Length: 328
Ligand code: ATP
Image (tube, rainbow, N blue to C red; front, side, top):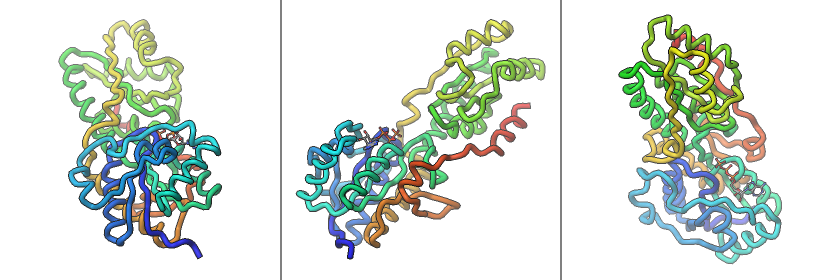
């Protein structure tokens, strides 16, 4: 018989993303709804090792649904990657009578939870929180929708300048391994070309496309580039290369950077966070463990943590075609 769960810990780990607070709020309030205790674990796994805990009730998460970042703080913990560190964390959880935890983070945080669960038979549940949307078992991660809206808003503003001066803008967006942000925000913002890690179009193809843009009567152009694109040049080298080969273009570079990770979560992310938080707690209370809660076909579903970590998210090929047609 699994141990009855009377107290659940919640932590945020790895990079922060908008919607994490809404998920913490959902976990805290679902615990209160089911009359069990909830403990906030500060600074990710490092705070777990150090016993940086605080009891949380439904009123301790007032006015947090609209806030970006994470009220529990986040951290990366090298110590948790060692068995000695995880043993300390386990002892702290036992000392505080915490029976299970919910971790909100990316695949690194899930790997830590998965290992911890195996080593100590400790019930864990994951909620995907990262703007990159690169986690298997969910069509959306927390923060992704907000980041898309932020990027589109920024590019709309850049476009005003681009069209006033007949300029070509290279806009670099986040996505070291996945092009979800670049592809979707690129279509949403009407980019002429989108460079993503999953598909190398090559330099020649980019030049051809930009030449075509000019002759087709476009006076300004936006190219959206994911950080991890495979074209073989960073965004500034690419600017120099294009200017050297297409002197008719005046190129400007805009690297959007960390602003993509901040800001109030979109309504979509708030609703998603609330649904995932409820499911995470109720799944633990049902005796389930070692899963990630995600959204698939509009429904909240569980995926084994190991599958979520190892699985690969594919880029939507239909979107590549839509983008190509739109840039005619
Ligand atoms: P993101 O990459 O989106 O910022 P993430 O959750 O993948 O989020 P990581 O920095 O990879 O971020 O991992 C967060 C924390 O999870 C690490 O600092 C570490 O404490 C723990 N962790 C990661 N990998 C392992 C591992 N192999 N074993 C134990 N713990 C791990």
